[in-house]
Image 1: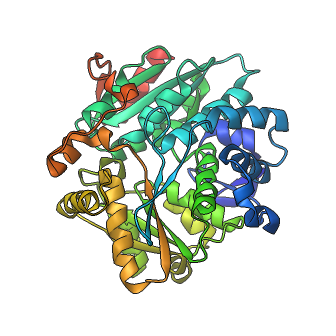
Image 2 (image 1 turned 90 degrees about the horizontal axis):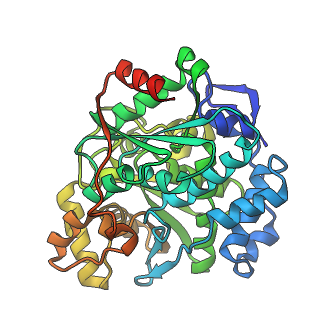
Length: 432
């Protein structure tokens, strides 16, 4: 598998280099040089494969010979060992539950695959690898769980102070060992900017081996494509299938676009956002205008400058009228989100989290003009992670799974920093 930078399509690197570096030196994003369709026989017969078997076939197709088959089988067995069930609400609405992993978020698939892949590539290195990751909520918990106690790898998680839920913060700040948390006095975009600046800092990179665990790392996107195939298999419908994706940094929907590009017959995508509507605005107008992020109750989508837009533009050659044929964009405010949470519960007796609620609203609006479709809404996190939002709306207790409830009484350990780069760089040099 060869990859190129979105800023330089003529320069190629190996999968190992792309995964371990995270970002190209030119500040682009790595993309596969070849996205050929999988065999029609495989797509037609998805029902014959288990989820791990599907994951292995897709990984083999994308990764090719960059990882030996025996090692890839081990990576898949460790990363894809929990389900992604589709729950049917009615003849049009289906929920793809992606929260059955250890951190109760969809990012468990990407984080665990990436941890195992990095461990494979890192096994012969003498110098430890330091993973930098910015989180708006769920990424940090998934990465912390995925990389916890991984030999030779340390993880530094940057999160915006006061802008993640209490239980999300506990997932980032209570593991210890090889996991460190930095509480940044700023937004997610500020956290992400610090991470990107660190990767481009030649002086820092001479001292520390750095890599990324955000969806800017291609090792996050590859496994996120797996569950699109798994969901498609489960609904097994002759209708046009539309995936509705709660979107922040746009890695999840980009993974779906990769799945479509290699042959999965997805009819359409819906990018569902909160008030951080940069991409829906682009899809509706052709104007891409990043702006400072706004805090909302669907905090994992509070991103004002989505990194993966560069990959989306690369896939379509930055051609707006082609992109908008495959992707529609919708955005909603907090009050609409709360109403949707209540509506889903009253109508279907299903408890949905704020991010899934935004996606529900988007497909509901899309369905008005496209009644011949079947929607699959990506429910990206367990509602208990947003108990302070969901419980008051429903006026009913939300069950908290034990692996999350056990964190409530643990003591937070985090270093508070302002959003300036120098204190962040000094902290890294002092600790690694």
